Structure formats: structure tokens, C-alpha cells
Length: 313
Ligand code: PDD
Image: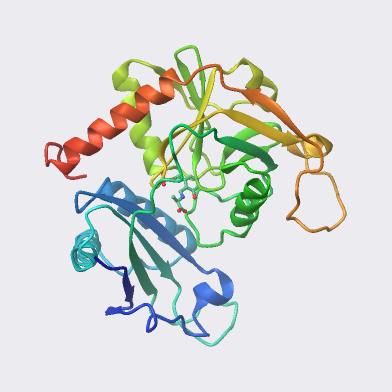
């Protein structure tokens, strides 16, 4: 069992797998990425991830260097070498290595990949999970799975400093998504999640959970939920490739910065990373029936996939 590192055609040790100084992902964040979960040695929903990678590459004008068949082969080989049955595979495609210059160079795209055993879910299903509302100051193309994640890492760090598991972005008074997950809200048996427009990453888990929810018979509205309507929601949960379905127990916000959740005025340049000055719990779950049902359905689907009962995605 080992961690696997792949760089432009070679499997390397972690020490050997270094990024060249003139690599554009490193210098400009000029690239895109994907992450897939491996269950029972098989990458789950891989075709959906590969389709999203195509869209991300196209969006930034990088030619996807491998076909779906070649990606599938490379990922399978990396997983095979790792010997891991339960793992996560991250891979990046950047505009390549070239002397620093904003203009696109004549360069081959770079491909890096890691396979890591699954970190035990931060879970302990029992412990309470909260979200911290953060103004969504990201650019207007968050549908692209770019490696430019500075606002996301600052938001997640701020949330963690406050004891929350995740940041919940709010744009003009509406919830968009988490810093590395999609957000869902439940009222009765109605489920709401932000529409897959340019302001959220169209999560692969979101797409899968949406199907599961409809199969169970829930009505799913791909509609934004307003911060002002949060009080009427019974449940909140988050989804991602690494989280699967995660129930949330409370939502908190910084009372002093509530206005920024509605609009971002011309505030003076200041450090982004802050500890909330006047935190307030603005919502607490009354139950988690729907999230729990979806978690179970997700686990069933994954177990079937592990046992080759479902077609390979
Ligand atoms: N993040 N929204 C954002 C901003 C994300 O970064 C992610 C995934 C998601 C959920 O997408 P998916 O269901 O395809 O994982 C939504 C991954 C897990 C990461 O960056 O580690």
C-alpha cells in the first residue's frame, strides 16, 4: 500500500515528484483538476469526472492531453500501483512549463496525479457539524474546476478557525456552495440546491445525489435558497466526492459582517483571514431524516458498485 505520484508520463517517489519553477500551474494557477473516489479498487463515476474535465480544459483553452480511454487506463494503473482499494485520486492538467509570461506559451500541457489512501472521514457521524457563512467573493466562473482555489482555502481556514467544518458561501443574499462541496437544504420532503449555473461547481456527487433523491421520490428544486429563508429549512447537508453526503447541525455567521452576505460594498483592503468577531448561530437542524436516507442510498449504490452490480460509469 503506498501513495502514488505521477508526473508527465512517469510514476515517481514523493521526493522526486517536484514542480519545475516555470510550471504555469505553480506560477499562475493556470490549470484545472479533478478528483475521483476509488471504492473497492474502482474509480466511481469516472466518466462524469472526465466529461467535467473536458469542459474545464475547454473553458481555459488547454487541450486535454489524454482521451477518456487513456485517462481511464492511467488512473487504473495508478490505483493498481498503489494497491489501495479505498482511495482518492487527484489529477491536475496545467498549461505546461514555459518561461514566465502571461501570454499562452507553445507548451505541452502538464499532467500530475496522486493516489492517496482515504483519510478517514473527518466524520464520527455523531459529532456536530457546523457551517460558517462567508461572503462569496470568488470570480464569476466557479463552474470551472480550476486549481485557483485561494478564496476557497481562505474560506475553509476561516471556517475551521471558528470550529466549523466548512464555509458556506453566500452571494447577494443567496447560498451558492461550500468551499469544497455543494450545499443542500430540505424543507419537509422538498430538497433545494443551487442551480448548476456559472456560480457553483457542478458537483459529480450533486448530480448523483440528485438522481438518488428523485428515485426515492423527493422533489428536488435546483433553486437558490436565500439566507433569509434559512430559518424555514429542516435540514442542511453537503456533498462532495470525498465527503459523500454530510449532515449539518448548525449554521453560524459573523453578526458584524452580515451585511457583506447581501452585498459586498467598497470595503477597505484588509486581511481576508479573520476570526469571526461576533459569531451567532443563525440556524439549527430539527432533524436529519432526508440526509440520512440519502447517505444510506449513497452507501448502497457504492456497495453495489464495489460488487460490480452496477454498470461502470
Ligand atoms: N471539491 N464545490 C466546490 C467548490 C468543490 O471544490 C467541490 C469538490 C464540490 C463538489 O464536487 P464533487 O461532488 O464533484 O466532488 C463543489 C473536491 C472534493 C476537492 O477539491 O477536494
